[in-house]
Image (cartoon, rainbow, N blue to C red; front, top):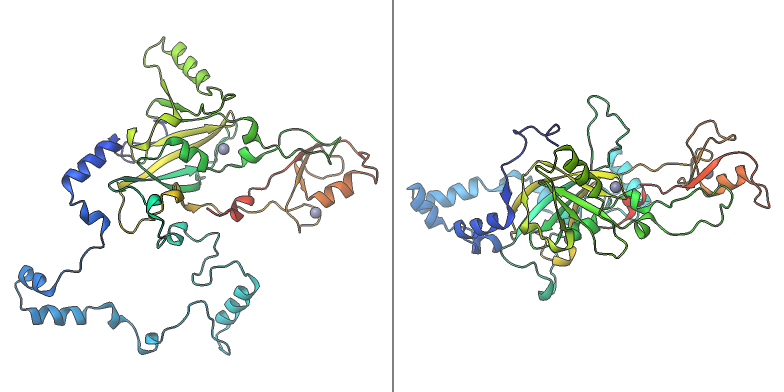
Length: 375
Ligand SMILES: [Zn+2]
Ligand SMILES: [Zn+2]
């Protein structure tokens, strides 16, 4: 970890609850939850030592309303593209919007890539689901997993897979359950001999263990009876290497809230699941909850951004998303090779489902499924 972070890129260690206590002591807490009152002209006049008339004139001259032209006063619906326009771009936009019913037409992005925080800006939850007052909000970036065997090319960037906002009083397990990774959805096993008998059992249903590694503490997810302590091997290695000095400690993930953590903003920590699927996580921000935040506690951890995955298409028809991946396939030009269900069976099997060549076949779960999931 020390190798990938220089001391200029992260903050000193902060105790989250300590930060909240300090903020409550220092700040006017009422200011955090109510819309800031618009100061009256008389207050400005006193502060600037000018007359009230001058302040009023300044207000009207500097108003954002003066930036508009007269046509903008007409109340328009941004989703409506005017017909009969000579502007080609507007015509193309209309055609595009008409062909995609799932698009949020008031913004220029699709719903999938629309920054989720805006979607929940004005949510009014029932009183029992209101976010508790005086709490911390942390912004956490979860990166794509890195393969230990894969050497990163110089200059290649690590990409953020998802970004969440969590509340200080939420447990680490809340974030663990929110993080989506294709490794959790994979179906284990080789099925070339029985392609019609693929069970719908995902890796997350079998391998439920996981941990966060934050400031030399392993937070293990041991909520289920069959969960394992994935951190044990690393801790034993550390103990043997340093003869017991500076060994790591463990805690149960479900017993720890974000308020209990000591964190460094910008410092890379680790989320590990499915045995060795390792994601860097970074706390990007720590602040108090304020009036512009989503107030519905049930929507946290709130996904505020995510990576848009490209679909892996079938290499035969290039029309459907891949459902199978084959290795050492006599009928394919490459290994691995991707197929949709239709092309896979048509190419590799006879009518009575007899295998026509030598190959290994595994069910393939496309990362594009995360594009369709709603946060
Ligand atoms: Zn993963
Ligand atoms: Zn196909």
